[in-house]
Length: 136
Image (cartoon, rainbow, N blue to C red; front, side):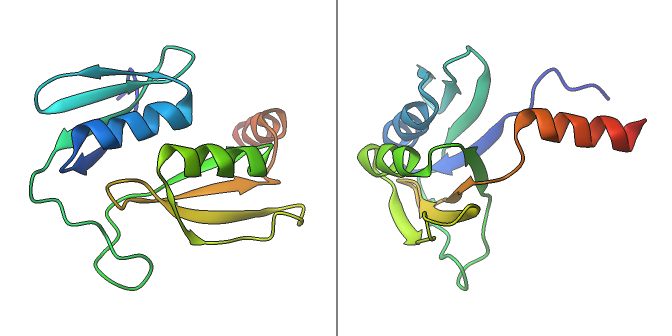
């Protein structure tokens, strides 16, 4: 199988709040349908779907109801990403030490889905080199 794209789909009772949040985080746009929104990133790639789930119950991170899904967003500037997340409507669940060279913070989006903003992980080039070396 060769997927054309991979899209993470979140359930949410409030389609508008959830899709606007993720479009804001990715610098993108939302294409709306009555029961489904598609979030397109700044480069024009479809990254996230939001499906209407009127009875959606947010997961209780970390020890409560089973986690339904989470994203790791790797960034170079964690302070800027944190500010953007908070402006967009995120809730901080677990703070990290932004003074450290590597780390992460855990947030919840408007529907309660946890996601992490991490920093200090390998660059795209280092990751591509790692994969190339392992697959060679």
